Structures are given as C-alpha cells and as structure tokens.
Image (cartoon, rainbow, N blue to C red; front, side, top):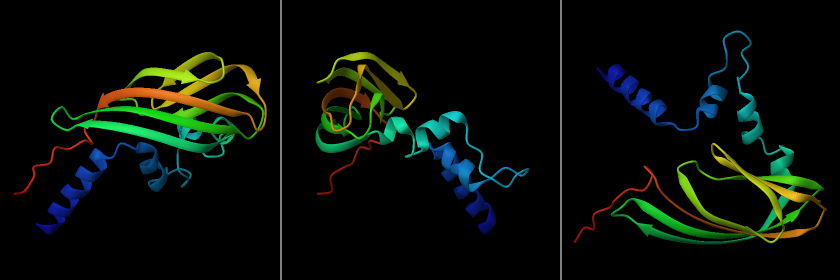
Length: 153
C-alpha cells in the first residue's frame, strides 16, 4: 500500500513539473546514458549562451501589484544592464503566460521576438562593450502559481 502511495506521489510531482528539460537531465537516454536536450533547451538553458552572457544586469526596479481574488498580477520592471561584448541581440527570460503591455528601450530596437518563455531584443546596431542600456517592461497575467490564502482570525 505504501509503495502505491509513494508511486502516486512521485507521478504527481513529475506531472506537475513544468521544467521538462530538468527531467531529461536526471533521466538520461538508455542508448548513450547521457542527458538528451533539444536545440531549444541548449539555447535557453545555458548560461554560456552568448545572447544571455553578453550583458551584465546592474539594477532591477520591480513593482508588482497582486490581485489574489483574480489570481492576477500586474507589474512594471526597470532593468539597467551593461553590454559585456559587442552584440546586436540579447535574450531575457519572460514566462509565456504573461502578457507584455509595453517595452521601452533606451536604444533603438529593430525587432522584438517572443518565443516560448523568452524575449529576443534585436538592436538596430551592434552594441559595444560597456554600453549601458535601460529597459522598461510592463506586463500582466494570471498564473496557476498564484494561490489564494484565507486569513486565520
């Protein structure tokens, strides 16, 4: 009976896990005994990715308004980052379930591409090393992670 309970609990945990790439890491393929990652996992999950490692965040100013009754958030984030190498594109994580209301950048952008849980900012010109850039993002969304709590009197 205990085995069934533990197995059920384990299956629930794996089912609720939203980071499948981590599961692939911990459960390698039978053929090679190495973890299997897709090209997307390699692009997004790696800190050595040049689109992620080409900048250094100097400052975050994050304001979040929560609406527990609607299970919703509304937020504004100011990010100041400095380029660490010459690059025309940077990558930021941005959860897919959040809706971007606006994005303002201190440098002219050629294009903004949103794919899955990331945003690619493509500048009109290559940014030089030590260039400081300001980014303002406002967004809103609902999440299954926002829980309603009942106050205990």
